Image (tube, rainbow, N blue to C red; front, side, top):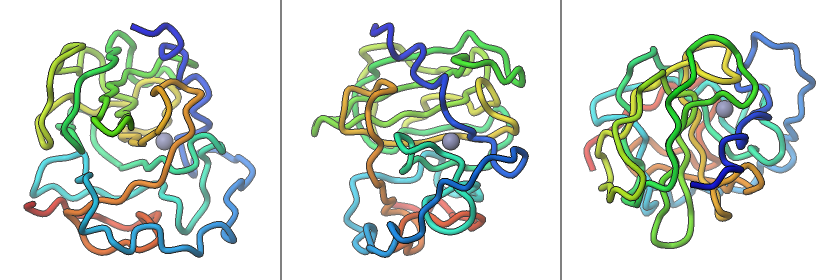
Length: 202
Ligand SMILES: [Zn+2]
């Protein structure tokens, strides 16, 4: 267990979208590259079961992005509390937290699962519901396995799943990197805010 991760999301600057009146830190000039032009070759799939469709509340294309710079490539999905969350990629469980209440907007009180992947990246599934973690640290997880139930814990104003991938150690200090999903429709510049994405068979 790495203590820093507990605080890792205390600054998840405002996963809460339009309900907050934050300055727009989104810079459209940085989004002209088609980072996901080859999405069908991505090692990642959407972090929810095949057959489910959820709206991207915050991508890095379009709309206002309330994610701070370090979370710049995070993605939020609107998702009712208790929705199954699945592994976007095979890996090993690196960190879990599930003790916090939903709906208290507590700083640093985000329930989450962190998976470590074999190329040194980490995927993070954040704002899970209380007692909503279905896996244990060190457990080997295969892509698509159920790992958690979504929620509204931590700095979240509405039930949703915050998902991101880092190339660091999975703690707050890790800079997020662009992530593309091979089992949904094309999204050449990344998932777009306000757009529904179906999790298709892969
Ligand atoms: Zn978020």
